[in-house]
Image (tube, rainbow, N blue to C red):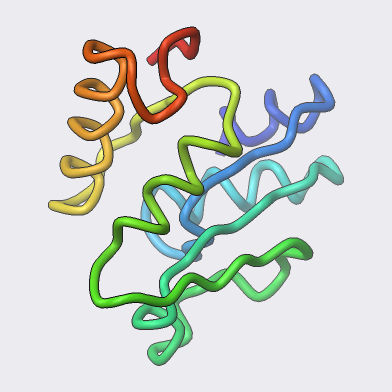
Length: 113
């Protein structure tokens, strides 16, 4: 929650997976509580259970047989990568970012993690 507040108070855009539960949900609630802007990037597979946060104004829904497009959009749209506790998907996104940075690929060369 507090990280979302800080992001909003510093006029930054919060780019994340658009969730409304767990750490991501708390982040989004904090950002929204201060009138912040969130760009949510979610795969269509996760829209069927209404897990996306309903108050996100800028929602990008990805398609495809896996999460490749979504992960790339998350990396492309953020100025840095902040990893909060999550599940297997969070772990996958983190290591994709680290490998992209280490290899100078995926537009991650100058982005802090």
